[in-house]
Amino acid sequence: MAYRYKTELHCHSKYVSSCSDVGAKEIVEQYLEFGYSTVVITDHLHEGTFQHWIPEAGLDERMEFFLNGYRKVKEYAKGRLNVLLGCEIRFPNTGGTDFLVYGADEDFFKNNPDMYRHERYWMGSLVHNNGCMFFQAHPFRFGMMLAEDYVVDGIEVFNGHPTQKSHNRMAEEWMKEYPSFIGISGSDHHGLEQYPDAGILTEAPITSNAQLLEVLRSGAFVCIRDTDTMESCRQKILGT
Image (cartoon, rainbow, N blue to C red; front, side, top):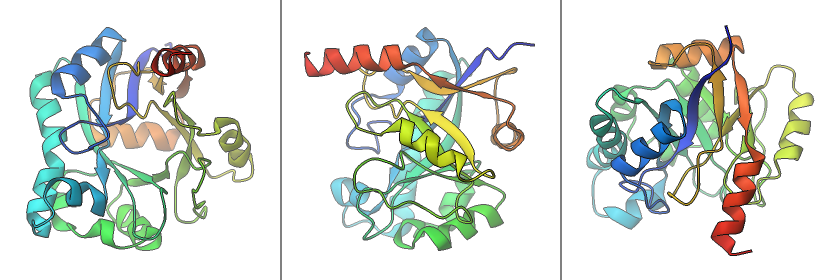
């Protein structure tokens, strides 16, 4: 059986991620157009998220707000596109260092509404104690702080954002130093002008968190690295 089902592992909605300008309709229709069967919504989860939108809100209200993006995309999809919950989390005093969480359900977030106020060691333990997975996003962008191999399950070896300097080749080389690492790929999608160009290919469509975790742990996938699409989007966005 061929690897032919596309899953996006890094996508932001405008409802939570202030850097995104795409809503539920735009996300769902574009990913269906580009042949994806599954999208993981990984909205930004850090202090700045809430300072931008609801600075006076308490922790529980903040987490309900965070979940809103995923819920809206899932509701609009109505089963035409599998929509899973994830996050891109950042901790205090770490610059732009981001981590991706996969396999968590809504209760995980509701039960730990202050998770973004801790640090990567605490968060890695929380994620793994709950049977989920923890990856470092775009580890070689300027200003990143590399995480230890005992903290994360792997790294994003291909980040498809067309205008960010993610230095994907360096990430690929870094992977070779750590045999236990799992390498993943994500479009880091923020807008309609940024076409989906990354993710993973699998033999069957991924329809649940449990299935996603099984695929990632087994290595039964191929990373999508559509550099041609990434470059064409870069030229279009920058006007070059």
